Every structure is written in C-alpha cells, then in structure tokens.
Length: 518
Image (cartoon, rainbow, N blue to C red):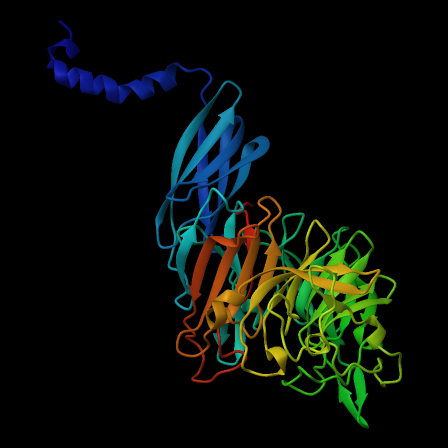
C-alpha cells in the first residue's frame, strides 16, 4: 500500500486538484515561461498609467485589461520575447487588477498583475453623472480640457472619466507653470497642448515626445487646429502688432493665425485678421483695450481650403487660404472700414443676411441684433465652430450681452446653414435656450459633432460662478433634442486666494469624447 493511498479520500481529492495545474504545465511542451516588471507612472506626470516589461522564453503578443466596473482593454500586435506594454485606465486609490494575456503559437497564458495607485489631486472636480444611455451614445470616455485656479495663475490637468464619473486618466502639466491648452489627441495618437510659446507633444503615458518653441514675438492662445496634412493652424497674438484707433496707437492681441509645420518645426504662413475687419467696432469688447477680436477658435474646410474663425467680440468670419475675406456672420451694427489704420475696405458687403426657413429676410431690428426672433438669433460671444458633414456650421453661442444688454442670458449650441452665393444664412437647429440661466456660460465652452452617432456634444464650461461653480457636458441627439448623456462637473475652486477672475477660478475650456487607448 502506498503512502498516498493511506490518506483519507477527501484529502486525496483536494491534493489532486491543487496539483492539477502544475501537472498540466509540466506536461505541456507548448507552455511559456515569463516575468513581468511593473512601473507605475513611468514618466511622472500620468499617475493612472503603468508600463509592463515582459520577458518570455518564446515569442508572444500581449493583451491587457484593467478589470473593474468599466474595464479598459487593449491588444498589442508586436510579437517578441521582450515586450514593453503600456497600461492606461487604472482606477485611482485602488489596488488595480490588470489581466495580462500572452498569446503564443499554440496557446495563451493569463496572469493577473496588481497595481496600487494613489489619490487624485484634491482640487479635481466632483463629477456627477446625470444620465447615461450607452445604446445611443458615441463610443469612448469623457475628456475634459480643464484648468484649475492657482492663486492668479492656471494649473492645467486634462482628465478622462468613465460613465460612473470615475477619473481614469489625467496628465499633470503643472511643470509648465501656466496654462497649456487646448488638450487634444492627434491623428498619430500624440497628445498635443501649447503654452504661449511652447508646443508640447506627449504619449498617453506622459512621455514627452516633442517640445518646440516658437518666436516670442508670437503668443499662442485659445486654439490649435490639426490640418489634414497633420500641420497646425494656430490662433496667436503678436507683440509688434498695433492698431490706430481714434488717434491712439494701441497694442492688439490675438488677431493673427499662423500655419505651423510639425515636420519642419517652423512657421510657414500668417494671416492678419485686422486686414479684413473693422478694428474700431467695440460693441462686444468690454475687457481691455486692443482685444478687439479675441479669436478663440478655428475650423478648416478642406472642400475649398477656407478657414472659419470665431472671434468672441465680432462673430464668425470665413477667409480663404490665400487670405481673401469670404463672409462675416455677425449682427449688422456698426461695421465700417477694415485695417489696422482703419484705411482699408468697406466690410458691410461681406455681412451675411439672416433668413427664415422659407427664405424670407428678417426685419432690420433682428439683422442688427437689437432683438431676437423666436426661431433665430445670432451667436453672441461665440466659441468652437464645427463643420457638419452636410456643410452646415454648429457653434457654441455663449449669449454674452445678447441684444446688447444683460437681460436675455442663455447659452446654446446652434446650427446654421450658409448660402455663400446669396450671402444669406439660416438657423437650422438649436439646443440650450430652453434651459435658460441653468445652462448660461458667459465664457469658454465647446460644441462637437460626433461622427459615428451623429450626436452633438455640448460643453457649458463656466456655470454659476461664485458659490456653486460648475460646468455641464451634454450629449444630445439632434433629431429629437433628447439628452443621451449628461454630467455635472462641480468645481472646487480651492486655490483662489480669496479673489475672483482669471487664475482664481476653475474653468472647463472644452470637452471631447475620446477612446482611452495608448
């Protein structure tokens, strides 16, 4: 009788089950031996990421999956015995379980790697999910181009959160010491942000891939747009740009565009918007002298190589790549002669005329913006124009000083159809007016067309400043104006220093729907 047979039956079964995996591995000639080394936050600015260094005794491919309520999975096609595998989407303040699958010829092996993360910064907002309908939403997580008060300066830290409102990725850009924006993911997968004179590109782990400085005569501000050839179109101001207004020589700001080559790292072309517009028109400039345009967004139309410019203080304009003015979409009030010295051409002939759905022209009081129609209004203090597949334009209408007063405050996303031949435009769709002051954002904000669902993503980025500062991110189905997603971003304003104004308030500049992928 063997020693094994003398052990009680129930204990023999238990020992057999425990040894079974070892017996199978020892008998499987197609198995793989491996080691995994884990480094959390490998580049020190992306705390919810990690890098796995995997060594195997036979060529493998890796798939990783961050387990949890909203798992993040990504497969990597590289085959080898030494793999460097990025992990994104870890949960904060959690002992994360990451499932690693190593596939090799003839089979696969699965290992659970545990990664402990820390707390997110205490100044991050509280994210409340109001509505989620994944059957009708655009795929992806929710990206915030968000910026935090820092005692008169700005601390930038873009965030991605999931459908539960949990932050799953962020980039700590405090090393720059000032605002860097807008945050966006490029076609090649790089994360791009800019400061006044610096262009940064990172990967999703926070590795700095590029850092280029432009001439300090230019100051980048508000907008960087990727062109079809992956170059950049950037809104800038110039230190040596001046206006002559009422006999005074005034330094202007944020009224040039530049074409910047990412490959050659240099400025290829510039446009002077003062060449086309009346720099003395001050109906909406209440902030400071010289900020007559306040360009805050650009949109490129590849169909005719034109650029749509949003100027908070003037409206929307369209110029060609060859620097010709095409049209102006703005209330028809106080438009005069163009030029920095106010000695250019008349601008009135470029103003679009507003018409209703039947093509009938609205009255003069509506054309000048002094009153609004029930089914039409201009964008006031506009942000973020975006071209739709049908050629129409959507824009965030902040509503700032609507009808030249402070009595009709609401913000909205609005769609316009422009007839360039007839120099007319029509309001096609809007969302937000019905929400009144609860959706009113006097500054910043965003609107995006979501290509797979056809929905519109709307960001009201600066709501209820003061006691309860917040922002809203809403995804809307434009066919029925039903919200399929809504989140409230409750700002904390921790580092205000007891003051208000720029650098003393948290702001949500823009938001995007973005896949969390390396």
